[in-house]
Image (cartoon, rainbow, N blue to C red):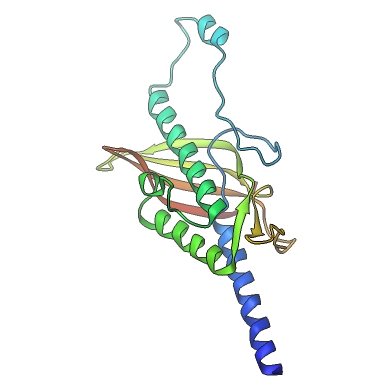
Length: 201
C-alpha cells in the first residue's frame, strides 16, 4: 500500500512538473504594446483619427508599414487562438491550423495534451509589449520575425473540475523575450516557430 501511494505521489509530481514546463514555454504574449490590465485580453491599439488627419505630406512613411500591420494582426490572432485553446485544453473548435504550422503547431498541441492529462485548463490572458517586426531578405516566401516581451503572470492554470488555481514555482520567470517566425502564405501569415529567449524583460 505504501508503494502504491509513493508511486501515485511521484506520478502527480511528474504531471505537475510537465505542466509547469509546458506553461512556462507556451504561455506567451501577443505582439502589441499592452500593459498589465488584469485578466482582460489586450486590445490592439488604433491611431486616433485626428492624428491621422493632421499628418503632413512631408512626414516620412515606413514602406513596410502595411506589411507590418498584416503581421501584427496575424500575431494578435495567433495568441488569441492559443488563449482560447488553452482555456479548454483542446484546439477543437479553434482556428489553430489556420494560424500555426510546423514546430509552433506541434508545440501548442503538445502543451494541450499535457494540460488534458493533468486535468487542467488556463484562465486569463497573456500580455505583451515592446514588439519589433523585421523581415528576412532572400526568403522564398515573405518571412517576418516578431520579437517582444511576454508577460504570463495573469495567465494561470487551474483545475478543470474545481477551478482551483495550480501552484507554480514562485521563482519561475513570468516576463521574458519571445521570438516568433512567420511566413506569408496564400491564406495569410502563418507562425512557423516560437522561441523563448533566456532573457527577462
